[in-house]
Structures are given as structure tokens and as C-alpha cells.
View 1 (cartoon, helix red, strand yellow):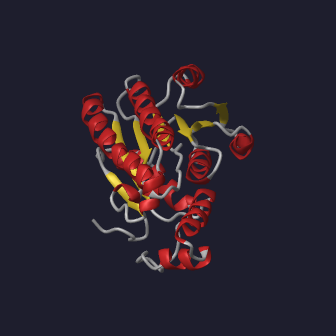
View 2 (cartoon, helix red, strand yellow):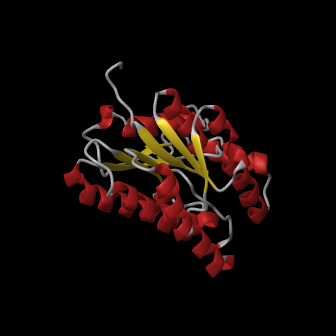
View 3 (cartoon, one colour):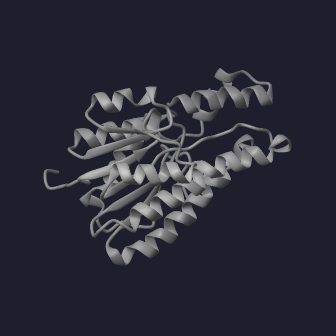
Length: 250
């Protein structure tokens, strides 16, 4: 629709690969000024080539987040796409695993959403990238990851209530099985723990997807993120929208 507008200036974390990269490129193609952020400098090359500003930043560090705020300036959009996962059997989960995952997926996400959000004005929007693992953690080898993504739901709802009076919307997306490097590594690591063939495990996982038993593309999720940032979603806030081909229906 020609009358749909997108953020004038938007920060996208996790922009070096996967969903974050696809989101940065789609928003740039739709006219937004994009500040593409990642700890992986080489991975930001595609975003830079598309005309995005790039910031190399470890968002788990408070001083690095402050540097990002200074570099980004005033924005009216934020995509919290950065996230990490560790595949560990429950008996082998360590304090270090838990702390590393929550530092990026929960703590950094909250402070970025809060601090950018408090500076935003009416019509601005934030999208947090969670996961279907927040609702269905039957893959027990990623329990800390799923727990971190469940926390993203609480953060999303809380900030939606807090920022709503200022006209700032906050939503979350829950990607399912998406064709990204993270997903490829996930299958290999789970298969190793279970002692099964990775290809067979991948086929088994695809059978849980109602829509043609296929994995999604990064663009499938990025398009939904762009929608939630846009004026077309102007009356949508505090929601967690699964982008999973019907893997979970609840």
C-alpha cells in the first residue's frame, strides 16, 4: 500500500546475518535510514553495501550500548534482533551458559528497548525478536535460550504498557524454524547430543510445521518485523506474533 510508512531512522541489532540482516536490508529498501549493529564487523558488509550505517558493538556491555546510543542519535524504530544460543543438555548447563545467554537476549534487549524507547515520540515502534522456544521448549537442549526468549515476552508487554501513553508501540515476533546459519548449527549440535543423524533430525523437525513442512526464510520474518514497525500496525502493541508456518498454534 502506497500510504504505508516506515520508520525514518531505525536501529537493527544482529544485522550481520539471518533475520537481523534481512530486516536491515528490507527496511533500507523501503526508505528507512538504517543503523545496522553487530559484534561481527565482517558480517555487516552487506548492510553497508546497501547504504546502511554500521556500528560494531557488543551490546552486552553497558559502555558499548552507550556508544551505540551516541552513534545512532534520534531514532523512531528499533529492532532487537541480536541473540545467542548455546546447545547444552540440561545436566550440563553451567552458570556461564546461563549468564552469557541472558546478557545478550534479555539484559541488553531490555536496556536498548527502554533507553531508545524513552527517547522516542508518537508513532515510533520497537520489535523484539523472541522465538517459538518461548512457548514450546520441547527441545530441551536449548532450555536456557527458551527461557531467555520467554523473558522477552514479559519485557515486551511491560514496555508496551509503559511507553504506550507516549504513542510508542512495542511488539515481539516469534520465529520458528528459519533457514539461517544459527539454525544449521543448532541441528548439528542437537543431533550430536542425541546421537542421531542431523539430516534425519532436520526432516523430523520440518514435520512439525503445518505450512508445507518447510522452513521459513529470514525474509519471511523480516517482512513481519517491517509490518510491525510500519504505520499499517499503528494500533498493534504488546503482542507476540509467531512467524513459524503453524509450528505452534496457541
